[in-house]
Image (cartoon, rainbow, N blue to C red; front, side, top):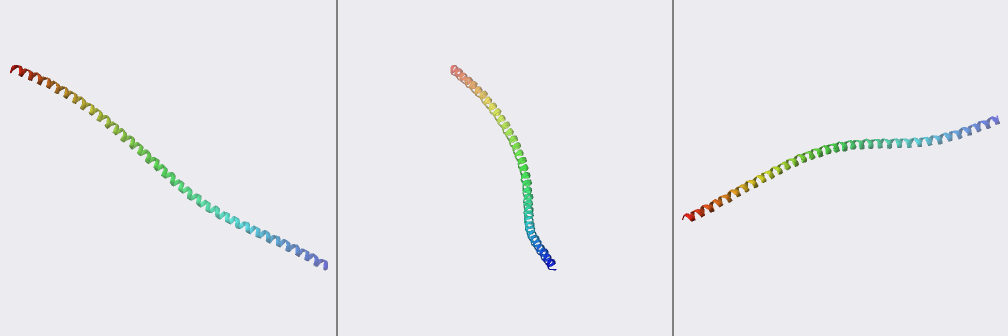
Amino acid sequence: AEQSLQESNSRLAAAESDLQALRSQHAALASEGERFREAAGLAGQRQAELEALQGQLVSLQTQNLQLQEARQQLEESFRTQQEALRSQLESTARDGEDVASSNARKQAEIEALRSQLELASSDRERLA
């Protein structure tokens, strides 16, 4: 009976030792589980931040495309205005050349009329 009691005590001590080891493992697993929950929470936050940043990226890309289109329209408008101004300048230059040519003809006519006037004046003096 004594030996049976010692064996029971020995098994009880072993069981208590196993129980203590299991409690330590349980505490370690609970702590690790908490770390995993925290990591999962952080991963969720990071995922939400990533999705927000992706939304901002899409918005910026859309704005960039709109700005590029506006720039192209402005460049086209500038080219059109530049061509219109070039055409006006060429027309003004031609008009200026026409006026200069007309002025030269009129100046020649004035000189011819002066010569005629001088001749007529000279003829009048001779006749007088």
